[in-house]
Image (tube, rainbow, N blue to C red; front, side):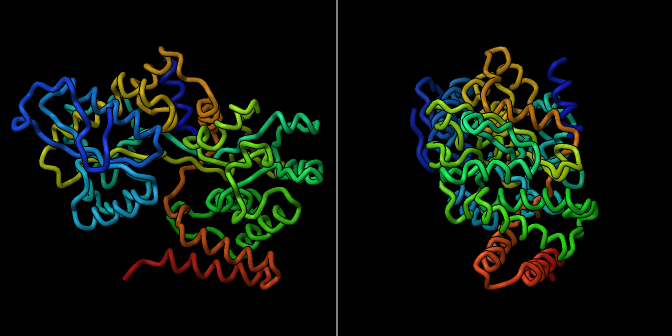
Length: 423
C-alpha cells in the first residue's frame, strides 16, 4: 500500500471504573477549580490498565484537568456509543471505530473539527495521507491511531513438523490439510468476519473485479458471490478450516489450529499464548491464487480513531488529552504496540528508542506496510448483517439444503438492499 510505504520511509528519515474519575495523587488544584472532561475506550483488561496509568500521568502534568473514564469490552461499548451519539451524551474524547465516521458524521458535522484545535494537537506528526481517513468534507473528524489489516499467522513449529513451507497460495493450504487432517489439525482457522474478508480476497483474485467500485457501487455479480460461497464450502469440506461456528481461539494455543487470520492489532490477543507455549508464530504473506501478486484483493484500514465530541464544553482541555494520547512519550511507552504500530511519528520514535518495535504485531505491521497492493477498506465491507447472511447461506449449502447458485442470489439481494439509498 503506497500510503503505508510512505510512512515507513518517513519514519526511517491506579484504578478507574466506568464513569469514575482516574485517581491523581499528585493533584494540588482544588477540585472546584478543576475542569472535568470524559474519556471512553474499548478493550481488554491490559488496555484498561495502561490507559488508567496514562490518565494518572496526564493529570499529574495537568492538575487543572480531571479525567473521568468510561470503558468496556467491544460489544458493550458499541451498543452504548450508539445510544450516546443519538442522544448527544457522548464523552468529550472517545475512541471510535472507522465505520462510525460515515455513520454518525456523513456531512462532517458529527464530531468536532480537529483542524480548529491544531494549535494544541500536533498534527505534523501524522503524514497527510493518513489524516485523510478521518476527513469528511474537509473537516477532520478523527485521527487514526494505527493502520490495520487482516493478516495470516502461521504456526511455523507445526508446519515444520510436517515438512511444509509457509503457505503463499490458497492451494498451499489445501496441501497442508492433506498432511494434517489425520492428526485432526487444521492448517488455518477464521472467525466469521475474517472468513468473509478472506472470501472476498479470493473472489477478487479469481475474477479481477473489486467488491466495491471506486464510486461505491457493488462490483461483484452473483457469480463472484458463488465463488465466495464455494470457497468456504471447500475449505470446510477438505478440513482446511473448521466451520466458523466451531472456531475456538483456545485451539490456536494448544496447536489444534496451525494458523489463523486476525487483525494486526489482535495478533498478540490471538497468538500470544501460543508463543508463550513455545510455538514459533510468524505472519505470512497475503495468500494468492498463484496468478496475482501478494496483497491483491486484500485491504487495510485505520485500526481506530480518537475523536472529540462536537458537544464538548471544553475543547481545549479535550485537545490536550488527545494530543497526550497520540503523541506523548508517556502514553507511547505504556501502550506499546497493543493498538498496533502507531501512525504518529513521535510515538513511533519513542518506541524505537526504547527498543519496543519488536514482536509479532510489529512483524505483521511491516508485512502490511511493505506491500504495495493493499487497498483501502470501505466500512461497508464490514457490514455485520451481510456477514451473517453469507454464513447463513453458506451453511445451507454445506448441509445440502440449498445450492451455491441459489445462495448467491439470496446474498446478492441482501447486498443490493443494503447499498440502496435510504428514503
